[in-house]
Each structure stands twice: as structure tokens, then as C-alpha cells.
Length: 219
Image (cartoon, rainbow, N blue to C red):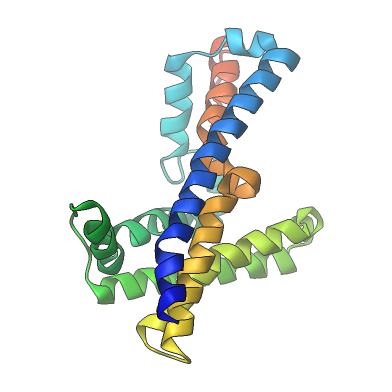
């Protein structure tokens, strides 16, 4: 079991990050080439001013018509994405592992705070699942990949919480936590999680079109 733990916290993590970096570069490069081939005109009117204006306005809760239309979804979505980013980065156990490997660390949050943040992420995943199941229009657009990605995103936090409280077998939960975390990282460029990569460019494209061409707001 110790050898398995060393493998998943060492080589497997490196493999996951290499796949993420190489895959992200490939997806971004291929999408740029496709846009240049299929819609070269759109690249010509991309504008920094209108791109940043769109991005900033969509980052403000309830600032856009889309956010105002569904307040509950807006609140949960913002909380989910902020905590999804901050919790793994600021968790003391992760920072300690990073410090052991690279020799430097940063500010961390307490374990209790991390637990509450983890529970909030899991609750948000449940909210998204219930919404996909009960809302007819959302259910119609939901694919098997959507369910798989939602489960994959939730599993690192579920297994991490179980490992912290040492429920079931601690070593198995800890290894499972690392493995599913690596799967999420590696899957980002090749699944719908790739919106992490493309959201900025999509928003820039729409913002430039509305601002520079249509002379209108896109929020």
C-alpha cells in the first residue's frame, strides 16, 4: 500500500500535469487554427477593450441579465467556482506536499475552514445534479458526459473528506482521493471541463462582437 501511495503522489501526479499542460496547449492551438480556417474574420475584430469589458462584467454577480434570471443558480455557481479553485490551493496538506517537493510554500487555511469549503462544494454538486434531473429543459440538454464530469469533480472532495475523518479505510480513501484528483486534472483539456481554458476566449469573442460590431452590451 505504501508503494502505491508513493506512486500516485509522485509519478501519477506528474503524468496528470503533463497531460494537462500538453493537452491544453494542443486544444488551444487546434482551436485557434480551426477558428483561423473557418472564421478568420472574427479574429480580425477581436478587441482588448471590449474583451476585458465583457469578462469583468460577467465576473460580477448579478451584473448580467443571465445572472439575474436565476438568482439561486448564480449564487451557487459563484460559490462553487471560487471554492473549487481556492480549496485545493490553500489546503495545508496540499501545501505541505508541494513544499516537500519544491521547497517553498504559501499561506494556508485551517482544516476546519477547508472542511466547510469542501462540504459547500459537495452541496453545490448535489444542487447541480438535482437541477439537471428535475428541470426539463436542463435534463433535455444533459448528456452522460455531463453526469460523469459532475461525479468526477465531486469525487476528490468526497474522498478527501472521508480520508480526513478516517471513515472506511483511510489509506484506500487517501489513494482514491489522489487518483481521482489526477483524473480531473488530466481530463480538463479533453472534456467539458475545458471551459476553464476557453471561457476567457469565448467571452472575449462575444464581447468584441457586441461591443465593436453591434455597439451593444453583451451582459
